[in-house]
Length: 116
Length: 115
Image 1: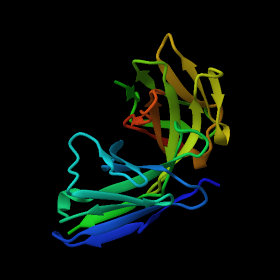
Image 2: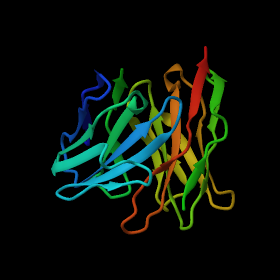
Image 3: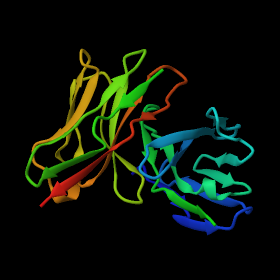
Image 4: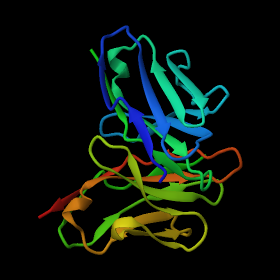
């Protein structure tokens, strides 16, 4: 149980285009999901907290107009990178709050974004 | 504010030897602490967690960690390393304050197992 999936696993896009990444909780309902960004050989940086039915809460320094987050259902959150640039290339990982308690998160497998 | 320091970005041990990955934390309240493992191009998998119960926590794959408040440490150990343990390991801290469940991660330790 408690599986989180992400789609796509890898995506290459051209500079200036937008790309959407999906995060799904497959066998549980997740009222809260989190989006992280991981730079090569670095730790995970929390970008935003996504709550079902409400606006996402962005961390300081994260551009909300560039990284659009939508949590339209209890099992799906999406991250859209708008007008992507090469510096947006990164590994994006989502997680979902565990149904067993709010201080545990289940992580998706990640999405590798490359902007050319 | 909470923070995590992982000493040693790279650790190499021989197969069958003791694994010790170090983690020190800083927190303004009694923390919850976590160890996660990440295999290449994959997400994070929870190894174990400390949530103010027993200070010695046992996790999956033979790993365990001990919470030492006096040392503000939560080091990860495994008595005998296996080749499949080669991965990146992240220590994380959370402050169990209502409305704040953010995880703050350390910079990670890459574990290499020498045959």
